[in-house]
Length: 274
Length: 350
Image (tube, rainbow over all chains, first blue to last red; front, side, top):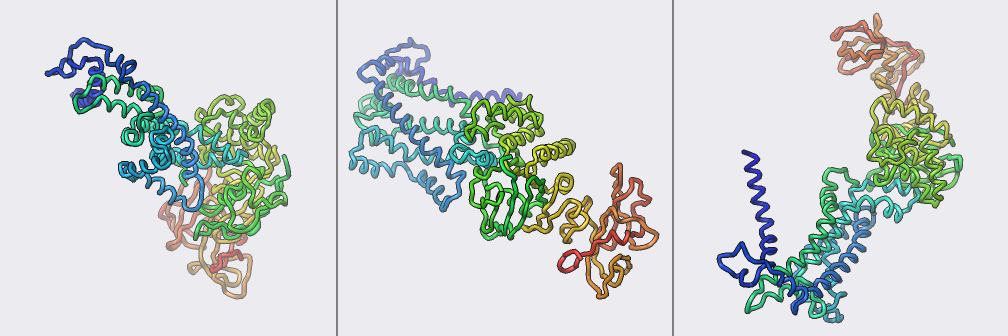
C-alpha cells in the first residue's frame, strides 16, 4: 500500500516535471491548425515542417544557435579562467582583507540584474560594444564570475590542507601543487561549475535582448520572433525550443556523472577549512 | 643522506593573534638522532614540527639546519620530508606515483624514479601495492606509503606527526618497531611528534616534553622517567602517572595527612612539598599511610589498585593477584629512594 502511495506521488511529480517538455515536443511535430485545435488533439499526423522551417527556412535559428554557442562558450571559458585561481585564492591563501574581498564577490550577486541593464547599455554604447560578441561576453562575465567563484570555493576548501602542504614539502611549489594535487581533486566541481555557467549563459534572455541586436542575437532572443502581436507561431516556437534544448540535454547526459558527484562532494567529507 | 641533519631552534616564539602558542623555545637536535616532541594536546609540539617544516612562520627566533639559517625558507627548499597524521596521500595517484612525486618535482628521469620508488617501497614492504590507489589500501599500508614517499628522496630531516595514531593497537605496536628499525637503517635525523608517552619512551633517543607552549624538560627516556623536573612532567609520564601528595618535608621524613614517611634526604628547614611516588613503587605495608581500596583492576599480567587517602586518589601497580579487596582499609609504604620531591609552590624538582 505504502509503495503504491509513494509511486503515485512520484508519478505525479514526474508528470508535472515532464509535461511541459513532452507537450513542447508534441507541439513541435504538429501543424499550426492542430496546435490551435480545441479540445487539444492527442492523435495527429506528425510533421517535420516546423523543424525544416526553423533550420532551413526564412526564420532559421541556426545562426542564432551559433551566436548562443559562441557567446556562451567564450563567457564560460573566460569565467573559468578567472574563477579557478580566484576561488583557490579565496579558499587557501591568507592575505589582508580576504573576508572583505570574499563578501564583495558575493555582494555583486545581490544586485538585481534588471537594475544593471541601463548602466550596462550606456557603458557598452559609449565604448561601441553594443551588439558585439565581446560586449555581451563581458556582460555575462559580470554575473557568471561571482557565481562560479562562490560555487568553487567550497570544492577547494574540501581538499585537506595537509595534502597541499605535503606537495609543498615535496618541492612542488604552489603552482605545481595546484596543478598536480589540487585541481585533479576538484575536477568534479570544476566540471559542474562549467556546466552551470554555460547553461546560465545559454539560457540568458534579458541582457541578450537589450544589449544584443541584429549581429548578435542568441537563440533565446530569436525564438521570441515567433511571438508577435498578430499571432504566436506555437509549433515553430516549440521546434525552436527543442533545438535550443538539444545542446543543454546533450551536455547534461555527458556530464551527469560529474554533476551528481560535484553536487554531493563535500556533503560528508571532512573539510580542509582552516 | 644529503647532509647530516643537525637542527637548532633558538628562542622561537609563535603567536596566533593575541594567543601565544610557543613562548620562546630552544632546542638542539643532533644529526641522526630520533628525537620525540612529547606533550598533551595544545602544548605546541605540532606547531614546532610545522615550524621545522616551514609550514608555519615564526613570530620571532631562528631555525637552523646544519648551521644554516632556514627560518624564512620555503618548505620545499629545506630538504625535509614529513609524514602527516592523516598521511596526506594524493588520492588520484597510484602508490607508485605518490612515492615518486617528490622526485618528479625535481625533474628526475623516469627510469631513475622507477628504480627509487621500487627501492623505497621495498624498504617498507609495499612493493606489491604499487599499482593501487590510496583508497584501495588499509590504514597500515597507507602509512607505509606515506613513509616511502618521505624516504624516497633521502632528505636530511624526517618529520613525523603522530603517524601511528590512526592505526589499531596491534598494528601500532608492530609499526613502532618497524619505524625504529627503519630510522636506524637510514640513520636520518627524525623528529617525531606524539602525545603517547609509551611511544615516546620506546622510540626516542631523546625526548622534549612540551607543556603550555614551553619545553619543560629535555632528556633521554630514562632521565625523563626517573627524574622528572617538574610536577607537570611527573604527572604526565608513566602509566598510570606518578602519585602526587602534598606534605611537609622536615628532617629525614615527609609528613602527609599526619603520617611520617621516611626519606633518604634531609632538610633542616621545614618545606611545603609535593611528594611523588610511581604507582609501581607504592606497596601495601603493615603500617604507613592509611588508604581505602576503591577498585582493583586486573590487567592479566598485573593489576592496578585505586586507593583513596582522604579525597585524594592514588594508584598502585603491582602483581596480578593483589591481596586486597575493594572497600578494605590498608596501609601504604614505599622505599625511601623511590620518593620524588617537588617544591609545592614552583613545582620544580628538589
